[in-house]
Amino acid sequence: MNMQLIREQFPILHQDINGHPLIYLDSAASSQKPRSVIDAVKRYYEWDNANVHRGVHTLGSRATDAYEGAREKVAKFINAASTQEIIFTRGATTSLNLVASGYARAVCGEGDEIVITPMEHHANLIPWQQAAKATGATLKYIPLQPDGTITIEDVEKTVTDRTKIVSVTHVSNVLGVINPIKEIAAIAHRHGAVMVVDGAQSAPHMAVDVRNLDCDFYAFSGHKMCAPTGIGVLYGKKALLDGMEPIEFGGEMIDHVDLQDATWKELPWKFEGGTPIIAGAVGLGAAIDFLTEIGMDAIEQHEHKLTAYAYDRLSTLDGITIYGPQQNRSGLVTFNLGEVHPHDVATVLDTKGIAVRAGHHCCQPLMRWLNVSSTARASFYLYNTEEDVDRLVDALQETREFFGYAIG
Ligand SMILES: *Cc1c(COP(=O)(O)O)cnc(C)c1O
Image (cartoon, rainbow, N blue to C red; front, top):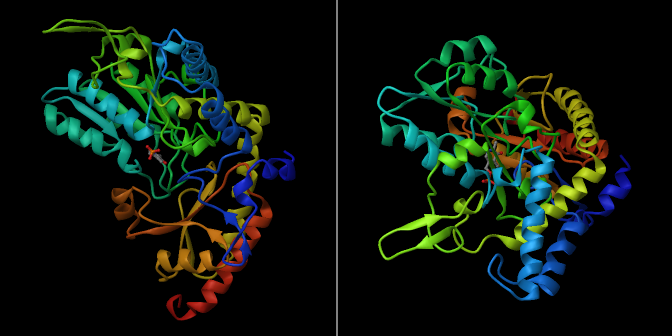
């Protein structure tokens, strides 16, 4: 990858923060946007903007083409069988809630099981808690190994014939663990359960093939993969989506409406009540073009190399604890520096122009398992370089000296 060319595409990266060139290491929370995405959204509003699906006028059909064209790009990007399986949502959170409300509540009852892991983001945890409470199902957890990974043996032990749903994150936003989704899906299916995947940290960083994974649902957010905020995707197998009732009702999603009853449009529109996120979808389509042109495999390799480099260099710092496995990890490193509070680490780094995240990363149960209240996290994307890592390590070295008393 030509790093200079890639970095030139991201206008936001070329500024000073607190007197230093910005080093953005918080892409796991939200990625930056390339010029092509910003321009696509701008062009849409300047030339094509109108509501979709209803207008007979030219702008209406241009907006519809742009919106439905983006759906085709998404379907191709994750290798879905058809655009009917691609539902636009507000993001991974909304997508997972749609499955928990629209599917889980319909199929689960007393004595049934929903299986997840302790490494889940709150977005792939609380919807299942709520669905379990509402239906009398039991929420079960596949245990974690000391390095934060799960084993296939434990999946085999946890999933039973009472299990209706297995929902696991593809990639952990804290540990960087990459879960063996295909193997877990096979186990789930053997027991008649469906496989739900939280793809918020995988879709942006690796080639994803939902048919090869054989997952039943796959959720992700646009804003973590170079697209605007407010747009996301739920992929679902057509047969399952066909069997589900919508959970939002109103315009756009209906076929025929009487005073007492109504019927729904076909897939995917029956799940897209109200005016959809048109400009967001246009931005997501442009983001997919951008990422595809560079190549998802090239992006994955770049991040893999960069993360290995970061892991090695960070490991040399006195008093640092790095969480998660050393091997087979995605593009992020979560750590603590002795007893220094991660918020203090992030604050000092910010004075040096370096943006990292500190907190519980929407994973409070995982923090408890790690026995910490919070951590710092540096996360990488296609625009980060070894120089960024060097600046981070140097800055952490200075932070360590500054807080030396707390490291011991
Ligand atoms: C960010 C994230 C989510 C939630 O995504 P939103 O865009 O906030 O809806 C869910 N799961 C994981 C693993 C994430 O990193």
